[in-house]
Every structure is written in structure tokens, then in C-alpha cells.
Length: 350
Image (cartoon, rainbow, N blue to C red; front, top):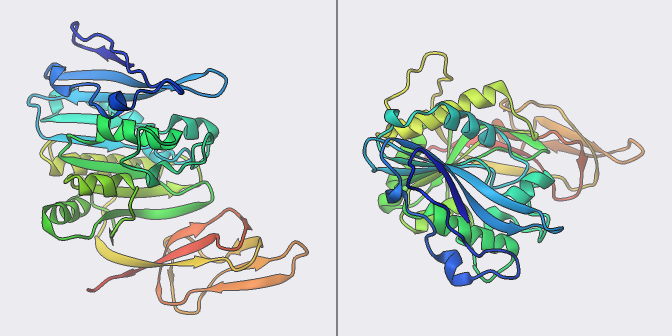
């Protein structure tokens, strides 16, 4: 069901039969709501009723639709695709409470938490089927729980937009510098995605040929310019992360002409650089002690950290294979072979 708490007295409630075991695939992929039915200059709080969790607990995906003085352009702000990433969730809650529809030109959809089961479990993946939602778009209405959720989100909230900002942070185990990923491709979508990446105003811009299944990859293939931003991590919400994300949101919307260009007073100012990266992974299981800080510049051969066994014996010294900046750093000390220890960024001159 989509429920609506709108300024309009004419909006009702519609049923979507998506309960587990009684799901109608043809209705899952159909558009279940129409933003053109919402009044201009209105703030609308809606919810997608997704189904029932184990034990009969109902869950839903709340979202907001702001309609400004005109209906276009249309943009989507989405967070909470992974259940242990919270900076984007909190920023969208605050932004949705602060935004007035008369400030807006166009239609803006805001989805703070798009994976409720993973959110309640506090895990990256859906605990029901262990699915990584951000590897399953555009979804499969006849597939697993996570594949059906991806289909529901994609066909109801992703399509029919002119641009998308997908908001992430790193997991409970790690933290990152603020950076933005964009589609590294030719044609209109590639050009516009790069322009949006520059416009959000972060230090590090990372071109990607995204693997299939990411929301931004599926959106790009559907012709929608999209970027994915990473801010913070460690399962936390920080003042600096919130300031950064609120600035990113306003710059994104200003670039699209949906909001006035924001004042830079009191906001972080960055000098954007296009970067590439290398991942450093553990070869042993044990206790990881980092020797660097996120954002720190390192030289080739610099010590990134040490891994000890359970008795305290040194097993592995992790060093930088090249000069760069510590873009992502594992802080969670227990490691297994293959766990990512860090990512080093370096400026790409190509």
C-alpha cells in the first residue's frame, strides 16, 4: 500500500499486494503512484507497504515528495540502501524537515531508508536472504526478498527521474574521506554524471565503470545521470558528516536548477581532483592495528598497519604500494584474510 499524508485533501490510499507469499509480480513492476497527481507547491509524506517480516511484523518504506512551483526537473535523493550506513539517512531526515516546497522548482523525491529489514538488523545485507540490495538493481519481481525489494524501489522510485543522488557511507568497520563516484562513460549520461560530480563540490571524484546491480549503474543504463557519494562510516552520525551531506544535497539541487545556489559561508570548500584507487587487503586473520589516519598522505613503503595473531605475534606488516592518500581505512580491529584494510587514492592525470 502507498499511504499519503499530503497537503492535498484529495489524495487517498491505494493497496499494493506485495505481502510475502502473495506477491503479484505484474503489480510489483507497475508504477504504483503518480507524482503528477500531487498538488504543486506541496509536501507529501508517503510510504510503500512492502510486506511482512518473519513473525508477522509489517514494514514499509517511508518517503517524501516535494512538488515546487513547476513539476520539472525531477530528482531523487536516496539513502539507507545498506542497513549500517547512517550519515545519509540522518541528512535526508533533516533536509526533508527543513525544505519548503515554495523554495523548489521541480519534483523532488526523498527516500531516507530504502532497506528497512537491513536497517533494523544493523547490517549491510538483508538478514532474511543475505542479499546485498546494492548489487541487485533493477531487481526481479519473481526473485528473492532482496531482488523483489530492488524491483519495487526501481520501478516506483528510481525511474522517471532526471538525476539521482545515491547517498552512502562506509560500513561499521571503516571510515572514508568524502568522495563521489560517477559513471565513467561516453555519451550524455557520462557527461552529465561528471558534471554533477563536479557540482556537489567534494575533494575526490572517482570515475567508475560500475558493476551490474548497483542502483546508480541500473539508473545510468536507463538513461538517468547518477552519482554515488560516500561520507563517513563506523555506523555513526557526525556533525562534520551532516554538514558535508547537507552541502552536497543543496549543491546537487542547485546544479539541476531546483534550488537557488547555496551560500558557501560556513560550508566545507574542496578542490576537486579526479582519482583512482588501490585496495589493500589482509593476508592473515588476527588483530589489526592501524598506523595512519583517514585522509593522511603516505609515501610508497609507508606502514599502514600491523596484523598480530591471537598470542600477539606479528603476522603481517601492511605497507603502501605507492604514494597516495588514505581514502578509506579499516578501524574495526578483528580481521580475516581478504578483508579490506585500506584504499589509497591518487590523482589520475589521464
